Length: 170
Image 1 (spheres, rainbow, N blue to C red):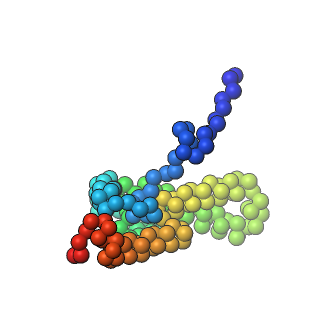
Image 2: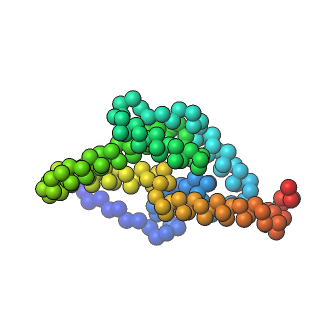
Image 3: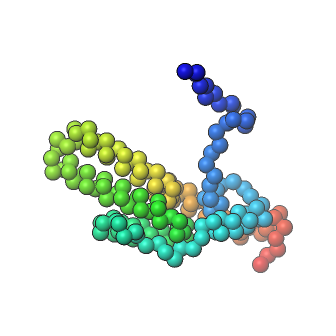
């Protein structure tokens, strides 16, 4: 069997691993107004509508309640679209199953030493963290969104930055 080498070149060289692309809403990179508007337009087009954010029928009642709670909490942020139903479904199931696992452990502490229970807990915890990252649910992600929104407001109200960007006072 031939050996496979996975050597990565140094940062900036061809073959280096790219970081995942971020939404323009959460980017800290400075973009020109034209770039910013173009990215926002394309992201909005790809995001689609947000008029069908309802839990799938196969979720149980607890999972549907979790789904609806997350949607209601994120509505004001305007970051959800209909395509997010799948990630919302996954996070709802993960939260519900983690709660069930913790209940099992609390009822019988020996379950904390059962490899199947611990394996399931790890799987659903990984799902939860991945989904939280995707949906900007972590405190760190929300803080970053808040900082970016403050910076955007400052840039939009700074007359010098408006002049430098070629905009006039509006």
